[in-house]
Length: 342
Image (cartoon, rainbow, N blue to C red):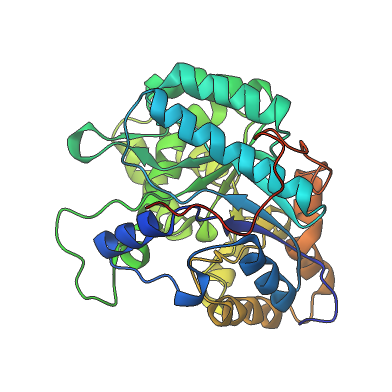
């Protein structure tokens, strides 16, 4: 354990259905550490203590395939209620980003935004890069979703934007290069670029958007978008496009290294960087490697490191760690024995 629990982890998942998670892993070419499934609150708390994390902001896994309907709404609502109760049961240790129904269900998504932010006191909303499968999939800047962005903008909400686990049109090249490794970083970039070139990033400026994994491939492809999308007809100038890429927040999970951090330093100031681990999708050993890289890179700049590790998050989430709703699921206590399905 580090000397002080002073870190705030903005990228920390909760997996409420171990069987569903295992099935998805097989589909996308990933293996969640055996010790992290089935997931329990104690699983995260032990890892947090080892990694020096005071507070972790929980988010649902980035699953894009689903459909509209009452069942989907109810599942998301129960998940958000559970996350809120977890925050109340462990004061100062957890916050949460509310999940939304399948985003094509615009009415249901608007209802869940209101319930999660007003009743459950969520710290923000979790979105994924696209919704749906194949040619029917829509990226988050699709015009259909404008009412959702308008409401988030009105509320000055924080959005945690994670790349979807969308397979390529070709198989991933090797069992060690599955979708989470090879495709998710590009999905994050595509969502960010879509928000920029569509003008939605400027149209909804009050939404604070966090891009996961240092934006995936965003820092490297932003200049490509700046010139070539403008050439293809985007009315924004190359300079304006770069400016809009600079307006995102970027978190460090599974990405902190001298190479990537050097690139980030040319794109955004350190007040746009946040600390993340992606636990429990990875082991504490993996999270430690990236955390150590981050510490080494900023070894001579303690104020910048403090900003990334906690101060930037405290400014972005002024209510983080404050008591959430005590119990909305029938009066029972938070249990470490979750129902992981039949």
